[in-house]
Length: 258
Image (cartoon, rainbow, N blue to C red; front, side, top):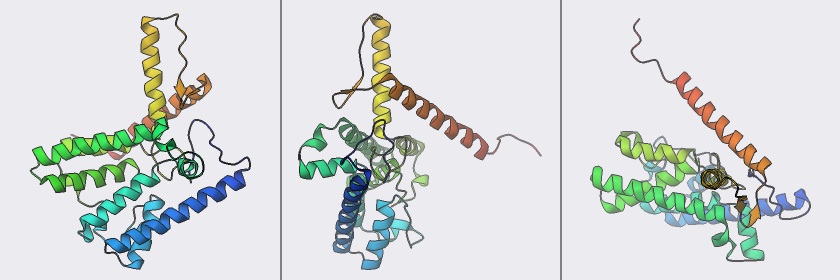
Protein backbone atom coordinates (compact mmCIF):
# COMPACT_ATOMS: atom_id res chain seq x y z
CA UNK A 1 0.00 0.00 0.00
CA UNK A 2 1.61 3.25 -1.10
CA UNK A 3 0.96 6.57 0.63
CA UNK A 4 3.34 9.08 -0.95
CA UNK A 5 1.05 12.05 -0.54
CA UNK A 6 2.16 15.49 0.60
CA UNK A 7 1.10 14.82 4.19
CA UNK A 8 0.91 11.83 6.51
CA UNK A 9 -2.52 10.24 6.91
CA UNK A 10 -2.59 8.15 10.08
CA UNK A 11 -5.63 6.10 11.08
CA UNK A 12 -4.12 5.06 14.42
CA UNK A 13 -1.30 6.50 16.56
CA UNK A 14 0.82 3.39 15.94
CA UNK A 15 1.81 2.61 12.36
CA UNK A 16 1.44 -1.12 13.10
CA UNK A 17 -2.26 -0.66 13.88
CA UNK A 18 -2.73 1.48 10.76
CA UNK A 19 -1.10 -1.22 8.62
CA UNK A 20 -3.45 -3.86 10.04
CA UNK A 21 -6.50 -1.80 9.15
CA UNK A 22 -5.27 -1.20 5.60
CA UNK A 23 -4.48 -4.88 5.06
CA UNK A 24 -7.93 -5.91 6.30
CA UNK A 25 -9.48 -3.49 3.81
CA UNK A 26 -7.21 -4.84 1.07
CA UNK A 27 -8.27 -8.44 1.76
CA UNK A 28 -11.98 -7.59 1.98
CA UNK A 29 -11.97 -5.68 -1.32
CA UNK A 30 -10.00 -8.51 -2.93
CA UNK A 31 -12.59 -11.06 -1.76
CA UNK A 32 -15.42 -8.94 -3.13
CA UNK A 33 -13.66 -8.65 -6.49
CA UNK A 34 -13.07 -12.41 -6.72
CA UNK A 35 -16.77 -13.02 -6.03
CA UNK A 36 -17.89 -10.37 -8.53
CA UNK A 37 -15.64 -11.74 -11.29
CA UNK A 38 -16.90 -15.27 -10.70
CA UNK A 39 -20.49 -14.07 -10.91
CA UNK A 40 -19.54 -12.29 -14.15
CA UNK A 41 -18.36 -15.57 -15.69
CA UNK A 42 -14.74 -16.14 -14.67
CA UNK A 43 -13.49 -19.37 -13.16
CA UNK A 44 -12.13 -19.25 -9.60
CA UNK A 45 -8.55 -19.48 -10.89
CA UNK A 46 -9.00 -16.64 -13.39
CA UNK A 47 -10.84 -14.54 -10.82
CA UNK A 48 -8.01 -14.94 -8.29
CA UNK A 49 -5.26 -14.20 -10.82
CA UNK A 50 -6.95 -11.09 -12.20
CA UNK A 51 -7.91 -9.85 -8.74
CA UNK A 52 -4.30 -10.06 -7.59
CA UNK A 53 -3.20 -8.22 -10.74
CA UNK A 54 -5.92 -5.59 -10.35
CA UNK A 55 -5.38 -4.89 -6.65
CA UNK A 56 -1.60 -4.68 -6.97
CA UNK A 57 -1.69 -2.85 -10.33
CA UNK A 58 0.28 -5.60 -12.04
CA UNK A 59 -1.99 -5.87 -15.06
CA UNK A 60 -0.86 -9.44 -15.68
CA UNK A 61 -3.08 -12.12 -17.22
CA UNK A 62 -2.54 -15.81 -18.01
CA UNK A 63 -3.92 -15.08 -21.49
CA UNK A 64 -1.90 -13.52 -24.27
CA UNK A 65 -4.82 -11.30 -25.29
CA UNK A 66 -5.35 -10.15 -21.71
CA UNK A 67 -8.88 -9.15 -20.75
CA UNK A 68 -9.80 -9.09 -24.44
CA UNK A 69 -9.64 -12.91 -24.38
CA UNK A 70 -12.87 -13.08 -22.36
CA UNK A 71 -14.86 -10.89 -24.74
CA UNK A 72 -17.20 -10.02 -21.86
CA UNK A 73 -18.43 -6.46 -21.28
CA UNK A 74 -19.65 -7.50 -17.81
CA UNK A 75 -16.17 -8.65 -16.75
CA UNK A 76 -14.70 -5.43 -18.10
CA UNK A 77 -17.18 -3.29 -16.17
CA UNK A 78 -16.47 -5.25 -12.97
CA UNK A 79 -12.72 -4.72 -13.40
CA UNK A 80 -13.28 -1.06 -14.22
CA UNK A 81 -15.18 -0.57 -10.97
CA UNK A 82 -12.50 -2.25 -8.86
CA UNK A 83 -9.66 -0.44 -10.65
CA UNK A 84 -11.47 2.78 -9.78
CA UNK A 85 -12.03 1.64 -6.19
CA UNK A 86 -8.39 0.71 -5.60
CA UNK A 87 -7.33 4.07 -7.00
CA UNK A 88 -8.91 5.92 -4.07
CA UNK A 89 -7.35 6.46 -0.66
CA UNK A 90 -7.96 3.35 1.45
CA UNK A 91 -7.98 5.45 4.61
CA UNK A 92 -11.13 7.15 3.32
CA UNK A 93 -12.91 3.79 3.12
CA UNK A 94 -12.09 3.09 6.75
CA UNK A 95 -13.31 6.50 7.87
CA UNK A 96 -16.43 6.17 5.72
CA UNK A 97 -17.34 2.95 7.54
CA UNK A 98 -16.30 3.96 11.06
CA UNK A 99 -16.95 7.70 11.37
CA UNK A 100 -18.39 9.57 8.40
CA UNK A 101 -20.14 7.91 5.46
CA UNK A 102 -20.00 11.12 3.39
CA UNK A 103 -16.25 11.68 3.72
CA UNK A 104 -15.54 10.35 0.22
CA UNK A 105 -17.63 13.07 -1.38
CA UNK A 106 -16.10 15.81 0.77
CA UNK A 107 -12.51 14.80 0.11
CA UNK A 108 -10.98 17.14 -2.47
CA UNK A 109 -8.60 14.57 -3.92
CA UNK A 110 -11.32 11.94 -4.40
CA UNK A 111 -13.62 14.44 -6.13
CA UNK A 112 -10.85 15.51 -8.51
CA UNK A 113 -9.88 11.87 -9.08
CA UNK A 114 -13.45 10.92 -10.04
CA UNK A 115 -13.77 14.07 -12.17
CA UNK A 116 -10.61 13.26 -14.12
CA UNK A 117 -11.81 9.72 -14.81
CA UNK A 118 -15.29 10.82 -15.87
CA UNK A 119 -13.99 13.71 -17.95
CA UNK A 120 -11.40 11.75 -19.91
CA UNK A 121 -13.78 8.80 -20.30
CA UNK A 122 -16.36 11.16 -21.78
CA UNK A 123 -13.84 12.69 -24.19
CA UNK A 124 -12.53 9.30 -25.32
CA UNK A 125 -16.09 7.99 -25.73
CA UNK A 126 -16.83 10.95 -28.00
CA UNK A 127 -13.70 10.31 -30.09
CA UNK A 128 -14.43 6.59 -30.46
CA UNK A 129 -18.07 7.21 -31.32
CA UNK A 130 -17.69 10.21 -33.64
CA UNK A 131 -14.27 9.75 -35.23
CA UNK A 132 -13.90 5.97 -35.28
CA UNK A 133 -17.51 4.91 -35.86
CA UNK A 134 -17.85 2.53 -32.90
CA UNK A 135 -21.27 1.95 -31.37
CA UNK A 136 -22.16 4.08 -28.36
CA UNK A 137 -22.09 1.05 -26.05
CA UNK A 138 -18.65 -0.12 -27.22
CA UNK A 139 -17.36 3.45 -27.10
CA UNK A 140 -18.36 3.74 -23.43
CA UNK A 141 -17.14 0.21 -22.72
CA UNK A 142 -13.66 0.65 -24.20
CA UNK A 143 -13.21 4.24 -23.04
CA UNK A 144 -14.12 3.60 -19.41
CA UNK A 145 -11.93 0.50 -19.18
CA UNK A 146 -8.83 1.88 -20.88
CA UNK A 147 -8.92 5.29 -19.20
CA UNK A 148 -9.32 3.71 -15.75
CA UNK A 149 -6.66 1.08 -16.42
CA UNK A 150 -4.07 3.54 -17.71
CA UNK A 151 -4.76 6.34 -15.23
CA UNK A 152 -4.47 3.98 -12.27
CA UNK A 153 -1.39 2.31 -13.82
CA UNK A 154 -3.09 -1.09 -13.58
CA UNK A 155 -2.07 -2.07 -17.10
CA UNK A 156 -5.02 -4.20 -18.22
CA UNK A 157 -6.13 -3.93 -21.86
CA UNK A 158 -9.47 -4.95 -23.32
CA UNK A 159 -8.60 -3.81 -26.84
CA UNK A 160 -5.47 -2.94 -28.83
CA UNK A 161 -5.69 0.84 -28.49
CA UNK A 162 -2.46 1.19 -30.48
CA UNK A 163 -4.71 0.79 -33.53
CA UNK A 164 -6.83 3.79 -32.54
CA UNK A 165 -6.50 7.22 -34.09
CA UNK A 166 -3.91 9.62 -32.71
CA UNK A 167 -6.57 11.77 -31.02
CA UNK A 168 -7.68 8.75 -28.95
CA UNK A 169 -4.12 7.70 -28.13
CA UNK A 170 -3.26 11.21 -26.91
CA UNK A 171 -6.07 11.04 -24.35
CA UNK A 172 -4.85 7.66 -23.12
CA UNK A 173 -1.29 9.00 -22.88
CA UNK A 174 -2.39 12.10 -20.98
CA UNK A 175 -4.06 10.22 -18.11
CA UNK A 176 -0.97 8.05 -17.67
CA UNK A 177 0.75 10.90 -15.82
CA UNK A 178 -2.04 11.51 -13.33
CA UNK A 179 -2.26 8.25 -11.40
CA UNK A 180 -4.51 7.43 -8.46
CA UNK A 181 -4.93 8.98 -5.03
CA UNK A 182 -2.37 9.04 -2.24
CA UNK A 183 -2.87 6.06 0.05
CA UNK A 184 -3.96 3.81 -2.81
CA UNK A 185 -2.27 0.92 -4.60
CA UNK A 186 -1.99 2.91 -7.83
CA UNK A 187 1.01 4.48 -9.54
CA UNK A 188 1.54 7.77 -11.33
CA UNK A 189 2.26 11.18 -9.86
CA UNK A 190 -0.92 11.05 -7.72
CA UNK A 191 -3.98 13.25 -8.05
CA UNK A 192 -3.15 15.27 -4.94
CA UNK A 193 0.04 16.57 -6.55
CA UNK A 194 -1.86 17.71 -9.64
CA UNK A 195 -4.42 19.39 -7.42
CA UNK A 196 -1.78 21.23 -5.41
CA UNK A 197 0.02 22.27 -8.60
CA UNK A 198 -3.21 23.74 -10.00
CA UNK A 199 -3.86 25.59 -6.74
CA UNK A 200 -0.29 26.88 -6.71
CA UNK A 201 -0.58 28.10 -10.32
CA UNK A 202 -3.87 29.83 -9.54
CA UNK A 203 -2.34 31.55 -6.51
CA UNK A 204 0.66 32.77 -8.51
CA UNK A 205 -1.62 34.20 -11.19
CA UNK A 206 -3.66 35.91 -8.50
CA UNK A 207 -0.51 37.34 -6.89
CA UNK A 208 0.58 38.64 -10.29
CA UNK A 209 -2.52 40.85 -10.28
CA UNK A 210 -2.51 41.51 -6.52
CA UNK A 211 1.15 41.21 -5.46
CA UNK A 212 0.59 42.28 -1.83
CA UNK A 213 -2.19 39.82 -1.07
CA UNK A 214 -1.35 36.84 1.17
CA UNK A 215 -3.33 33.86 -0.07
CA UNK A 216 -2.53 30.49 1.57
CA UNK A 217 -3.18 27.26 -0.27
CA UNK A 218 -5.59 24.90 1.49
CA UNK A 219 -6.22 21.20 1.00
CA UNK A 220 -9.28 19.66 2.66
CA UNK A 221 -9.57 22.76 4.83
CA UNK A 222 -5.95 22.66 6.03
CA UNK A 223 -3.22 25.10 5.05
CA UNK A 224 -0.42 23.55 2.98
CA UNK A 225 3.04 24.80 3.94
CA UNK A 226 5.46 26.23 1.39
CA UNK A 227 7.89 23.38 2.14
CA UNK A 228 5.30 20.83 1.05
CA UNK A 229 4.50 22.82 -2.08
CA UNK A 230 8.19 23.03 -2.92
CA UNK A 231 8.62 19.27 -2.53
CA UNK A 232 5.58 18.63 -4.73
CA UNK A 233 6.84 20.94 -7.47
CA UNK A 234 10.32 19.40 -7.30
CA UNK A 235 8.88 15.90 -7.59
CA UNK A 236 6.75 16.82 -10.61
CA UNK A 237 9.66 18.51 -12.39
CA UNK A 238 11.93 15.51 -11.79
CA UNK A 239 9.18 13.09 -12.85
CA UNK A 240 8.56 14.91 -16.14
CA UNK A 241 12.29 15.34 -16.78
CA UNK A 242 12.95 11.62 -16.31
CA UNK A 243 10.08 10.79 -18.66
CA UNK A 244 11.30 13.17 -21.37
CA UNK A 245 14.91 12.03 -21.06
CA UNK A 246 13.94 8.35 -21.12
CA UNK A 247 11.71 8.91 -24.16
CA UNK A 248 14.60 10.53 -25.99
CA UNK A 249 16.84 7.55 -25.21
CA UNK A 250 14.26 4.98 -26.27
CA UNK A 251 13.14 6.81 -29.39
CA UNK A 252 15.38 5.95 -32.36
CA UNK A 253 16.86 8.92 -34.15
CA UNK A 254 14.86 9.82 -37.23
CA UNK A 255 16.46 10.61 -40.48
CA UNK A 256 19.77 8.97 -39.55
CA UNK A 257 21.63 7.44 -42.45
CA UNK A 258 24.00 4.52 -42.20
